[in-house]
Length: 281
Image 1 (tube, rainbow, N blue to C red):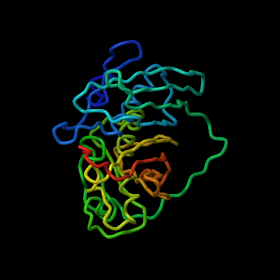
Image 2 (cartoon, helix red, strand yellow):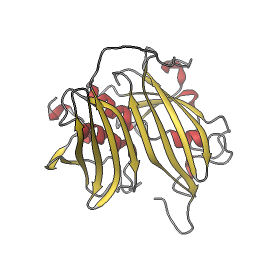
Image 3 (tube, one colour):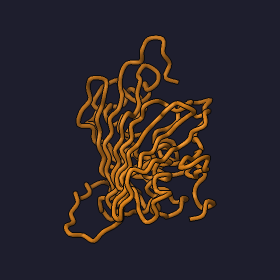
């Protein structure tokens, strides 16, 4: 794939051996923090550069420090193993000498089935009946998402409900390429599980994030099960089985339009009181 076909925010500019400069997405005047989904997507793009024929199977990322939108972000790739069917790389996001995130990525080739099964998709309204289409924000720039039932994720006055959330997501303007589809999907996996964990708790919602609550993703493990196209709606089914001790845990199953399980992820997050005198902005 030529560089001109790759969306700008996923392009890699080589600045040294296995080291690439990437673009940050967002307005630092509004919120000067790099979105974790951006880094996941860029890490996926960088991890496959020197492993033609392999695709990401699993990426496990630890977000050590927040990155700044107004600082230069670079991605360093270190190969651990590159075999015939499997490979692994360590991918690190840097801003100067500040390590922001590090991921261990398992690469894989497709092999014939010996066994095959998957969890069936839940019954949800079709995208046309599910709710309002939103553009951008918590998903890839320009992509669309629908929160099923138009659940209010922002207002502190929103009614309580179980720690569950279903979201439809698609990106029709990006190339229908397997690695780009993985990167685009990864971008949209970062932003919903914290809000999901807040749903059972009265007066607690994402409107308080970075105001009176310190929130953020600290670890994220995303596994791709089979190929998919982001040109079609995928359904992300979230749940948060635990919250406590200033942390939350969440998981999600992702199904394509045909009901096939195509990916899944788990996430650990911070949800704690903002320290006195500290601003989250």
